[in-house]
Image 1 (cartoon, helix red, strand yellow):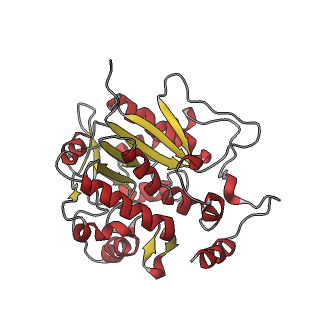
Image 2 (cartoon, rainbow, N blue to C red):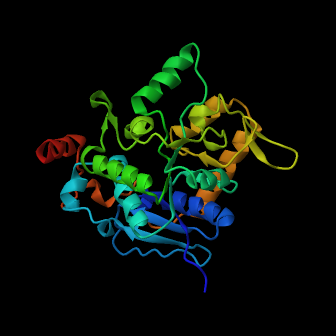
Length: 319
């Protein structure tokens, strides 16, 4: 009898990001066919539209209603789409740990895997949590403001990736984070919070055995290509700053992230090839019938858009 998967890898998204989630899972499946892959959906499909993963896809969908969040509708109303997609990460993480997985790994839907995550598996055998920092080197000149001060505002660690072991300390960290996200997962930089991310700045103090993974191939993205130049060697291996690329974070690559990626990469043919590949994968994995920027919770029942002011007023009421 085959053993149950020891690792759960999940992402959270609306259905407008389904092509990204499918691209992510296809790459994870290639290198980790034994992992259990889960899309946590914070959405409803447009009326009349059905979706089932293809026969070559092995991910499943867990709906927001399965996360045990009390009064979900009222709670969700206080969040915009990014805030909600990130707020459910804590409850989902705890759900999967409670299900008995030995390791739970979160990846943003707009990431893609290019080699096995062996370093993460090794670290989780000895540490409760693994994080990746936005930056690996001190900055100079204008880069101090562009990068270091930005990291101080938005968070030292990029929560497009998080890995937690099913240990006593891993569970303690997961539940701490879940509780914060249930109450404070908002984009309010002036108040000292930025969705799910800045909380982990406290990890070295609260959970001192947290592993900080400084491998340049993890969480490479437009914001750190200046310190992780991307290249393709003679064998076809993709490298960033000399390390093999493990996963790339294609943040907003079809909007502001695309020009930012080109700007930071200069005229690197490797970056352009990577973007070309990713955009073709998004096209291959698109689901016809889902409108661009679709999100079921973006409007009132009568179709009127829910404004940021409406959501902020709901936060005051909840607090």
